[in-house]
Image 1 (cartoon, rainbow, N blue to C red):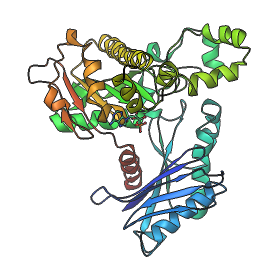
Image 2: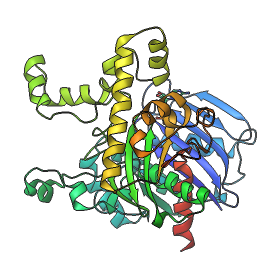
Image 3: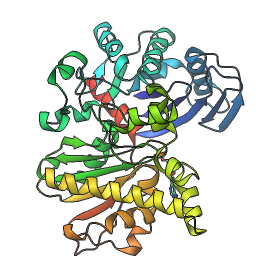
Length: 396
Ligand code: AMP
């Protein structure tokens, strides 16, 4: 069985074709600048291929992907019939979806209702589904949601302390994101240590350009740092994370900005970029710190401190923690980040083994044998989860 995994963004599309017999990636690639001039596809299959071409919309992009997969030189399939199904990453499933689903007309109606909750993401995801229904007629489509894993959170974790009627009327609550990633790495941990998740308290730290922490008790998400939107929680590449909501009207007044403009500042000009005034990329900031840049140092300190505070609060929420896992661009590749966060965790009995921690992008236990809480680096694989969920639903 071969499954095409699609992650449609507003102007980009990432894809993988996965052979479910051995879970190998047959081909992968990226379409960028969809709807903008100089759009391009980067494809890796039997060979590598890159082309600047005109993709005016997602339909053009998905056609390019299909052409690349079928190409005799760098493609990997002879006929589109070899693709059994398509798995779509969908950012927001609201309160409708607590697990992945086969797309039906009813599912599509619910997805439309979630657009209000994720206006930047869900429209592109829905577009991807619609285009695939047209271009890959009759192939099952599966939606896998970033929010679904967190639907197990108890009310005390997902309610905001604002008038209850706003939850009832507008569904304002914590949803959480990166659920596919938190789910995958906690399951991998359970396989690595050969212990059922139902017996574990785990804190997963997805630290990439977007970043979130999740408390997973007995295999269920009981709290997570992203909220109603992916803006809440940790300090991120360009997002502020938690802040006093009173800052928003104050800034509107002082800077003569609209609420929308302030929201944009908080989403795209804040985080480590905003504090460091250097970059949203942690590698650039680490470089600047090594040259003595004080603001860059403050940005990193703020980032580590916030992650450590969340780990502490989730250890409290679960009344303990057995393992902490780091993943995503920064969590997988930056020993300094893991070390600096873990420096705050002596009270949990965390001891990091410097040699083991000196790893990048591979599954490793990075704590010492005597560490009371184990700490791991586990690379995430959201595409594989999407493909597995798709296969699982088809098998049913
Ligand atoms: P992601 O969103 O998961 O792709 O993560 C992207 C972020 O990971 C980048 O913005 C970098 O800040 C960070 N990153 C990736 N590789 C490294 C590295 N070797 N050292 C430090 N940070 C890294």
